[in-house]
Image (tube, rainbow, N blue to C red; front, side):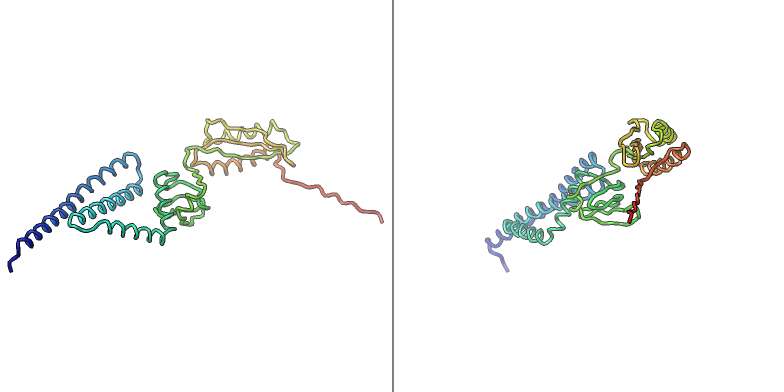
Length: 269
């Protein structure tokens, strides 16, 4: 069966368009890999975060392939306008169906970009306090002090106050220690200074504060505020509380507790 000249021209035209489309796919894929690798190299110089790097690699790759495929379809005569409109409608429908998940996804991107915490930090966020185990695109996994694993949606974290106890290298311990009104304030201050001087984990700077802060209902209250490395915070706090009690007992300084005097009156008949 012989083909007419018009059929031959049409076949030649379609053949050339198909070759152009294949060329766009091949060259576009190669260029896309080069561009993705270049973007990842730039990001890696600024941020050492495997989660962010992997996410960007996947996102850039998908977006570039969408552009390349649309360009290739255009080359073979496909009406890409309707395709783009269909993709937009599908994206809108999926967005409405997965609204909660997309909110968590967007919140995950914000956490990855702004980095208010990283894996290993002790954080209070989303109503949970614990060590960050994993930061994902949709949720974050915490390990609580009693070794529970808690998964919190990222949107709940972004919408809440985030307190990162490991963000700074040092922390201040705030202790309130009361003595009796009949005790010697100068002696109590000297005992507190001695206890703090014997604790080697207390930092010399900033200087420790020891001051009378309040004349309470049943005690004269001292504030004791030493600075320590963040990793030593709880160990030093617990140790100081115990050592102050022992030192006060040895020095004869009392630590009062709230008391009430009960007066009973008997009416005469």
